[in-house]
Every structure is written in structure tokens, then in C-alpha cells.
Image 1 (tube, rainbow, N blue to C red):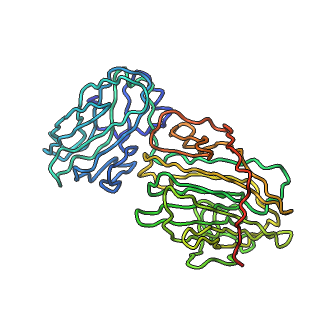
Image 2 (cartoon, rainbow, N blue to C red):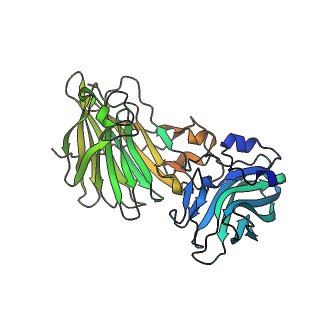
Image 3 (cartoon, helix red, strand yellow):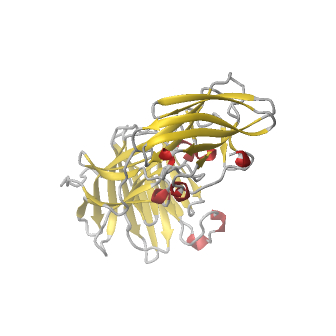
Length: 418
């Protein structure tokens, strides 16, 4: 390892990491998480983990071990000349300590010895600083694994630490004129940077978000026409959605960087574990325009309220491509579990007929293909569920279809504001 000490940590994809059979396995520091405060140090692809001066902050890696046996563990870190660092690594219920001193400024290796990995599956690697508060623990570059248990081990080697986004799609008979889409949802876990989306369609999405420990939102957004993905200032006037109306206390503005369009949100402290109700409607105004509206059943007033309505160009039709999803939009805490229930889905046709949607198909974003396999869909207590993150063993195959029990009764209390 001497010749490699002054090389930067190698950035490896998940598949590349998994393909290193019995060879030494090097997991970049920028793929790790910080606990309990994600801001307790700095994580970057170029420098690894820096400014780690608080011993209450732990550095966490998660890896899927495919082969039981001995696992030799070390950490490569940068120290100032003459500096020392005392560290502890815990894996599979065992912990080892190591102290390193830098003879000169550069990269040194803290070797923790061998750990016994008795079972396959996800293992958590917890690195702790045993240094005095305020004393730099060193800049962490790489977790180095070797031995039989490193064979075919799987880690996410990319800088994107988000859990995979997961979706459920509702099949609807072709040519159905869907005038309204109704869905109920229960958020079961509440890490920040989570968006539980209930009612999605080909032009927008509607759901609830956790923005910070003190702020939650109900969000309704509609995409512009055209192909601009980032900057709404570049969207031609004839492609822009226009705000028609919004509810009391609702903010409305623009969004970009994921397509562009009109965004609206209501700051409201919706509660984890309680049912939330959402309804999206489509009203064609002519052959080329449709007004899309999002309505939320406010838990306090016990009434439906308008979040916002947007007039969308190059439409003139109804809702299609119906889906729900769960997203981890901030990767710093992508190791945490997110889970929500989705149920009692109905559509109302332009002819006034209510049709229950009891079947849904699972999908995930590219992150879920190989980088993060902890993504699931299923049926629980009569509801569909989506979960992702947590490094939970197993996974749900892309495209798997599920059916929930039918409720049999459409919503009867939908009285929308004028």
C-alpha cells in the first residue's frame, strides 16, 4: 500500500466496486454519511471528509457483504506534519482502535485489523474520533477493505448519496378522459428532504414535503411546455403555464432545474402517521389549453381548499400518466429510511363516472438500478407502500405489479371551493 498512499481516492461506480473480487476494496470517503448532524463536517468529492473536529460526529459507510469471513479494515486520512489522530471503527458488533501520527504532511493509514463477518447482508461501518473536542481528526480519504469478506462486496461508489426515488404507476384504460384524480397518503417516516407525492400526472405533481426540522409544505406544481430543463427565463411565452388562482396563504412562483414551470406551496405542519387527502382536476378550456388545479383537504378546517390552478398551453385534454412517488431530494441523509402509504385511489371521468384504481406498478430512478438497491413497493394493511433508504436488505423488482383490496366507495364529500 506504500506506493498508493499519496494517490487520491479512486472514484468507483457501484458495479466497479462490486466486481473487485478478492482484491483490495477502496470506498471513497465522499460516499459516507455524518451522524447525528449532517453538517458536522464537510463532505466533498474532491477532498473527502474535512473539518471533522467534533468527536460527537460519526462517519458512516454502508456496504452489502456477499461473503462471510474475515474483513481487514483500514482508513486512509490526511494529517498535518507531526499531528496525531486516535480513531475507532465499529463493524458487525465489534470495534477496534488505531492511533496514527504523520511524520510529514500527507496521507497515512489507520489500520484497525481484522473483523469477523458472520452473516451476509448490509453492514454499517462506523468511524469515530477519540480525539479531544476541537482537535482535527484528519481529512478522511478512503475506507480500505481486504480479506475474504471483501469479495464481491457492494457499496455505492458515487458521490450521489440520495436513496433511489421510487414510483408507483396506475394503469388506466386508453382514451379514458380523466377529469379528476384522487389519492390518500400517510407519511410513516419523516427525515428532512423528503417529498411524498400523491397525485402525479403527465404535466405535474402534488404532495407533501419535509423541508427542515420546523417546516413542512403541501406542494402543487405544473410543468411548462417545451424542452427547457433548467432556466425558466429561456421558456418562450407561448410555452409558459399561467397562474389562474391560488388559495389563502399559498405562495406561487416559478421553478426550474427539473424542467420548468409554475410552483405553489402551502406551509402547513402535516403530521406523520395521519391520513392526508389530495385531488387534481383537469378542465380543458379550448383545443390547446387545460386548467389544472390541486385541492387539499385541510385537516384543521375539515374542508377542501384550493392550493392553485394553472392554465397549461399545448394541451386541451385531460389527465394521463397517473402515478405517485417518494423522493429523497437531499443526499446528505440518504441513509435514512423513508416510507409512506398510498391508498383509496380513484379517478372521475369527464362523463362523471368514478373508477377505483387498485393496481399499481413499481419503478425507480437510475440510482435504484445498481447504486442503491434498498427500494421497495408492496401492499400493507390494504394500502400500497413505497419505501427507500435505510439500507434494508432485499429489493422489489422494477416493473412488479401489485393489487390492493378495493374500497368500493368513491369519495362522497368532495365539495370544491369556487
